[in-house]
Image 1 (cartoon, rainbow, N blue to C red):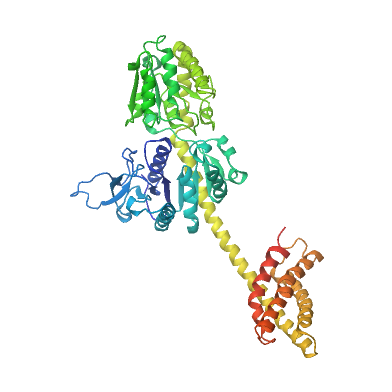
Image 2 (cartoon, rainbow, N blue to C red; image 1 turned 90 degrees about the horizontal axis):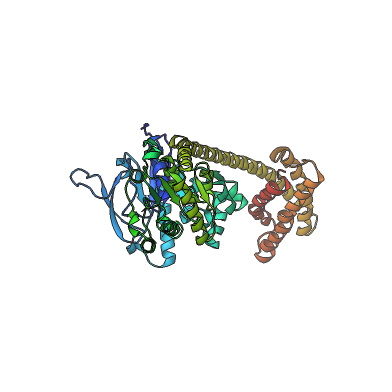
Length: 555
């Protein structure tokens, strides 16, 4: 591990929880990588789940030995089902590893819907104010929107990452609108596939950067089981839900049971559809040949000697489990689902098999055909297995993590340059305003002299104001061209620029000034000699803005 010191950047990583899902796995891997590279890393989550990924450098605990761990402080948190939990945390001063902060509201802190939203927003803002990271990395849907909304007031650069097919994460018109409105404010938008960018507006696409997932070290370090030693096992890994769509795999395998009596199906994971899928398995000719393991600790141990891996999702980003199975040399079969993740990984017929999207019945039929080929043709299966191992290099942690690091460093350096540029621009504006003000002050005295002289001759104050205006605006045009806005016009000494200067001064110097003079003198009874001085506090700033951003605007 590289030395950690105050000069190293601080990265805050924001996600719902560290539950055992693909996005959570990627964030945990990135947290470990950046910490080992010497960065300060803080993970911010809404929830604390009962079954989370474990990080070797994490400094939070589910339980402690009070005699040995007296620096750990008990903290009340909730899980995604709103059940209270207790976790033990180290404060920042005592934390030598990856820190954890929670943004969820406890049930006792909630009231109405609007109040809860404002309270969650305020709590997240307070977290950013306390952490003051150099960069925030946010994962998934609403988290990305919340991160941008709460961090912008602090000027903290935010990189948002869409981990699935965008329509899954921004599934309502309101969410899509908010994403298209807020994402241009992000320091970057990380996608897993090029196709995912098409969901967003052009301004968002300009911010998009594709960074794939890496293969976990445990899958690369493991020795590949020779093809001839593999068991006749089909495996699938993922949440048991409607999108993962394992039902078509269960039905397809059921149709092939009689033809391939030595094969079994192992489904790893858990979710809302487990009951439904268990029922489907019970309807097959031999239900005992289908095993549901639930969530397990070391997936690599369980699937390393299997022969075939199947992904049946309706939508995916860049599926980690698919890459990991290929890294172990399994024959992989996947739906060619949006937004193109499996197709980015698999070259159909070369290192795996892609089945076209369609109705569940159509995909089931395609899957039956693909499984039949993989189970009956050992020559094909061996070639697919051997070619699948190419992902070990393509998606190796050394390569992919370095891409993330280079991207983050680029983003953070660009933000520093942007901040310096903003400061330099502000300084330049201040200099120009001072110059404009001095010229305006000079012309004010001249204008007052002309104004008072015309009144002395018996002229009406509005006539006096108009004559003074015509003379001093031309003088302002000449002096500002020479000293204040030199080089900012398309043609400095053009009639067009002079006309725009007269128009801008007409808005503020003639009509506005005349209107204000009428208010001061006729309505409020202020002395007509004092009224023009009061006007300066209104007209000079407005004159500057009109000249700077319109009359002398750079082309």
